[in-house]
Length: 138
Ligand SMILES: [Zn+2]
Image (cartoon, rainbow, N blue to C red; front, side, top):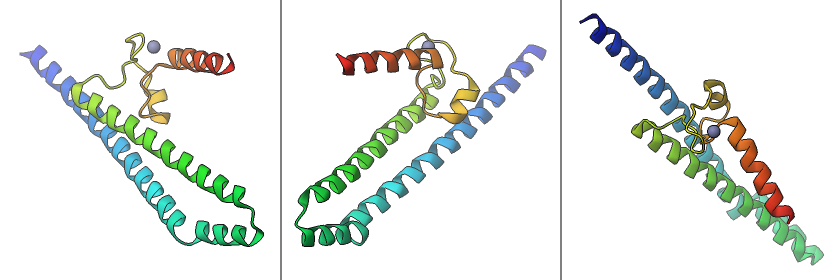
């Protein structure tokens, strides 16, 4: 009986943690969507169009290309982050959130606070980044 009560308390603790993390993730998701939307709006009208018009006078189209490039890159970064957040939310439901996909260890709470959608522990993240860097340099 006593053991059962303890277990129940632990489950509630876990639920509270889950709820807290879910809120962080959803908040982050909304922030990014808002940012992406304003990015698109800026691109469609106002700032960026003005830039385009100014550039047109100079006849230098490469700047337009550049502005477009930067904008698209920002949007694709937003998109990638959204995918990561959705993955984290799914993991939270499945109960696999906060577990490193590489070694299966728990990712420290400290790290998750900074990077709520991290899927690797710090060591494995560093290893991955090093590998990617090496691949790019080859
Ligand atoms: Zn790991």
